[in-house]
Amino acid sequence: MVQDVSRRDFLKVGGIAGFAAGAAGLGIGSILGAPAEAHAEAITVTDFVYTCPLCGQKTTDYDALVKHFGEQHPDAAVPECATLSINGSEVKVQVEPHWTLRETLLMAVGLTGGAKQMCDRGACGSCTVLIDGVPALSCSTLVVECQGKQIETSEGIAADETWRPLVEAYAKHDAAQCGYCTPGQFTVAKYIIEKYGEPTEEQIRAELAGNICRCGTYSRHVKAIQEAAAAIKGGN
Image 1 (cartoon, rainbow, N blue to C red):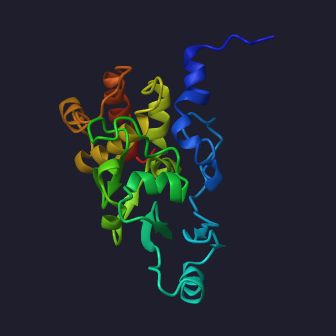
Image 2 (image 1 turned 90 degrees about the vertical axis):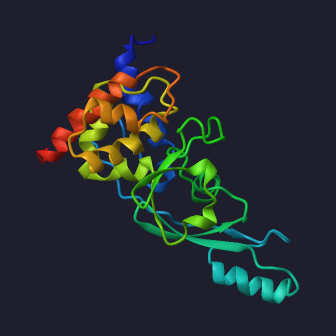
């Protein structure tokens, strides 16, 4: 027997949580729309595997991969490795020079929730992350440009208790329907609150202008961001 579930309940339990739940393998779990007693865990990136593109040998240490190349492929170039600071954790990832930050977050780091691919042309904003606190399109940013910079994704923001009011406000106001564009909007929402403190509707709409929502939930983002900003300022 199938229970009747309202659209609001569905979104609170599943839809709005979807963009963060995909990173459960990193210890994040179900973040948005979770019950009040649930808390997101700190993000860690572990067990990263480095693979030799020539013979398939796998190691869990980049230095071991370099040693492997010296012993087994002395005439070949060692694969590039980027050191990235992602949501407060520093990781070394094996990358190709042409990889974008979005590709790296998804395929190398395993953060499947925060860097969605929609247009892949820098036009929709779904893949927005914060780089040194400023919104950036991860589909149009080469990962090699991000070394030495602080990268924040929606998973990292949602896992920070400081920003719990923003998570709860997004769930309360149904600021997502399909949820696919939500990570980018949610990330920009943090930037807006940090920049303006208590932003006006005009400021919010202007900053979110580059984030396209096919479901048309724009007005709900305004309500959610303003409510969260007030709660954060009040220490709630």
